Image 1 (cartoon, helix red, strand yellow):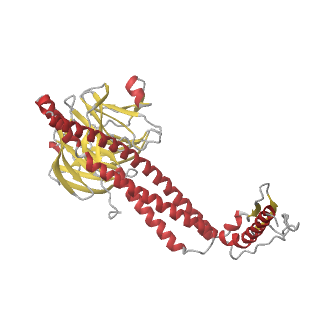
Image 2 (cartoon, rainbow, N blue to C red):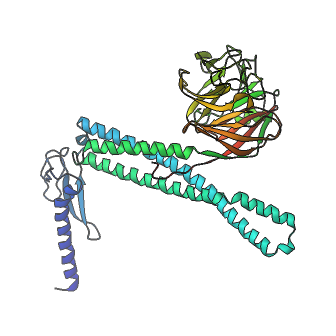
Image 3 (tube, rainbow, N blue to C red):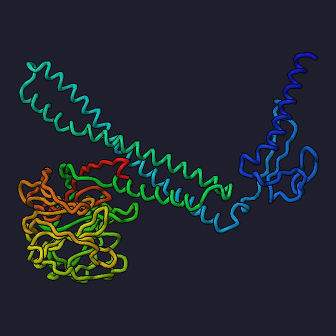
Length: 485
């Protein structure tokens, strides 16, 4: 036998072996160990025997056609209809469980994008820091050729940026943790898919427990990544100059994506007209607005817009009102028991600022003072639908000594004044029921702060500073370890 004929014989022999192996092995690979494979039922032609299978909807069909143009074996597989895999309640539960894991996967992707964005920012800062450190070494080596003023300026800048190095390391650790979560979700999704194909291969209760545990860990991780401890406040950015010396302005942190409407309230008492601007750009560049008339005048500058409604303190009372902009009606009102009002326990600047409503990552808050707490600040978490107090914390800080205050991640931050030199110097954590004195610089550009609120969606502070509407960016520091999760 010649060599070409020998090669053809080997190829044909190999093709026969592959065909035989696929017809015997393929069903077990796809989880159909108990399903009979036949090529003799009606419905589809058997290309090797010319017989039609009887019912192609109930079993896998495997049959082959000779060879392609290059001598390779061509094998055809017909799978049963998908309806065969979902004919009991247990399959429905598994499908719902799979959808839940897929939703968690989407959350992981959003979380991963957010962490990667922060990581890129900090890595960029690290490069700048390394360059600055190199430059500083050059200055030290050639200090005779540089003035003392340049030397001190560069050294001060380096010391300012040096703390960013451990921050970078923590961000890198966070990024690794997110990748671990992604891998775990992918593994669990794969298990669920296999379970749908091979019913009864795994214990359903055990799998449900694994998914629930992963969901709790994911939720805790997302909350930790979104929150952190305030470590810095940027220089102010003046958005607009308008209105009187006192007032408030804000955007809705719970508004749908793309909704950037600005809400504007001039004055601190005996006014009931709220301006609505279509966007931040409209607010900055034009004076076109829609006016909403509230059923009662407000008191102070502690109003907040949250999820399409404005929450405000009714003038000369300790009543909180929830007004729905969409229906132009009061959807809820409730007395804040024992809260001082009508300039009894105001901020240091006065202005009927007894009750200050705020929103952070955790929801709606009220900050006020009571006789029972000797005029010191009380923090209450409110149900945004019913306005009922969920829980309250009493602090040791006098309300009248506070310049302004705002909530970030369940922590109340208080400034030491409202005019001239100002800083954030007191923090009370509702998570641990503890307080501390801090020192965070805060530039009071126009010398009179009458409103200061945090927006968790923008991660920015909105301020009304002597007739100027101003924004500040904030820096939050967070540390996540696997032990905490």
